[in-house]
Each structure stands twice: as structure tokens, then as C-alpha cells.
Image 1 (cartoon, rainbow, N blue to C red):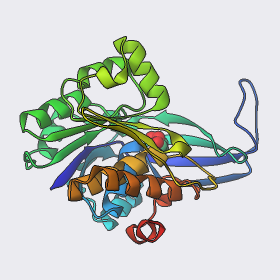
Image 2 (image 1 turned 120 degrees about the vertical axis):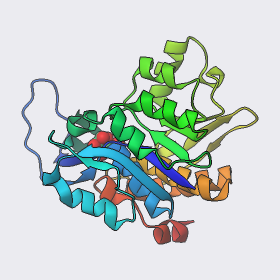
Image 3 (image 1 turned 60 degrees about the horizontal axis):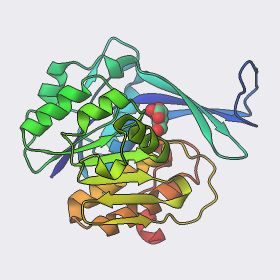
Image 4 (image 1 turned 120 degrees about the horizontal axis):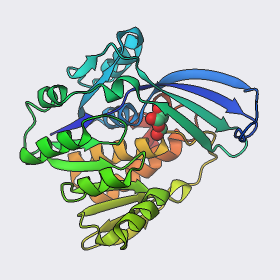
Length: 288
Ligand code: RIB
């Protein structure tokens, strides 16, 4: 079974700071690096590292082909990662060296140049046993999910960056919703009822260093995360989701897949970077 991921591809520029920039402040960074990022690409990398089959649907500019090559080298199917004349999206990721917290500014670029036709081509071989996954960092998310639904696929939606209107459109379509605690509260405000009454079969609320809350029609529990010394939490949620979905798709074992995913995400935050910080299958298995 494959996971079709309509996902952003960004070049992430990381600035290591003594504290997060305050309004009106000019602040010198202590370090600068760059690497592959974007919520979609991070999730595809995590799926591939967990041994999942992932087909990434997206767009980027050819000048950044080395990141395309990086995705291919991980056995991610890039047949439908289109080359665009619009610059590749990028993230300005500012990381507080003391707290490991971050602020991220995103320029969508080519991620918003994805067309209906690209999505249709990307989904052409998908079948009912496959998953469709998307986030809120590309164009065509609604079209993608509606096409995937028409094919009988299982649908997972990561409602980040959060947009209440887009999320309300997705709720009747999807099988699995993934949000963090802030997004969960925003969604409850938009719905005017508790998230567990949103009508989605599987809900995952990520809780940062505390792990993840699973809310299902028959079950609700917290899967705690191992305690680690975090240096950079950027992309931890993407890592968690990619690892979880890959494992869940392979095994159907929800609790074991959640345990696997929180363990992998806990390793990822001990390293700087986003996609480059995602651990290998061997690293996660030895930590388990
Ligand atoms: O979730 C982290 C990601 O958000 C970064 O890689 C950045 O590019 C933004 O998309």
C-alpha cells in the first residue's frame, strides 16, 4: 500500500539565536545552516525512513534540484514532484538556543503553483487500499482530498498551518485528523464543540514533549514521549506523523505505531534541522 502525499517542499534556512526576535529588535544569529524542509517533504522523508512507500505530489524550482535528489535517494517516488518556474518555497526557521523553541516564517512559492491537473496526474494510479495525506502548505488540498475520497482512499489531514475554514471543509471527508494542542483549541472554537465530536474516526493531538493524545470512537489515551534533551523542535510533528502513518499502514497496530512514532520524534528533536534530523529505522528500533 502506498501513501500519496500532496506536500510542500521548502528550503529551510536555520538561524540559531540567543532568544527569539522581539518586535522591532535586530538580532545577530550565532549560527546559520540550510536544509530540506516543508511539512510535506518532512513527512515524506519520515514515511520513507520508516520503510513506507510514499509518492510525493508537489512542485519546486529546478535550481533546488539537490533537494529533489535528496528525496529520490530516500526511495521517495518523485514522479509527480513537478518543476515550476516559481521559486521553491522556503522557511526562515529561528531557533532559541536556550529553550529549543522556534518561530517559522514560510514563503509558499511553488507549493502554491500546484494545479488541479498535477493532482489528477499524481493520483492516477492510486487505489482504495492507499492513503492520501496532505497539510495546509500547498494549493489544491481540497481538490486532492475530494479526488482521493472518490477513489475510496483513506484520508489523513494534518491541519497545519491551521486554517479554520479549510479544516471545516476537510472534516466530513477524512478518516484521520492530526493537530497540535493549539490547533485543537482553535478547531474547537470554530466548531463550538469538543474536538472528539468533530465526526472524524481517528484524531491525533500532538502534545509536544508529553507525547500524543489519541481520540477514537471507541478509545482515548495518551502515548507518552520518551524524555530527551531537545535542541530544536522544528519538524517534530511532521516526523511523528510520517513515522506513525507508515507504521500504521504496514501493521494496522495503532498503539505500537504511536509508540514507534513518538520515539522517532523524540530522537529528531535532539538534533538541529528538520528533514535531515529525522532518524533512521535502525536508530528508532534500537531506541525502542
Ligand atoms: O514543520 C516544520 C516545517 O514547517 C519546516 O520545515 C518549514 O519549512 C515549515 O514548512
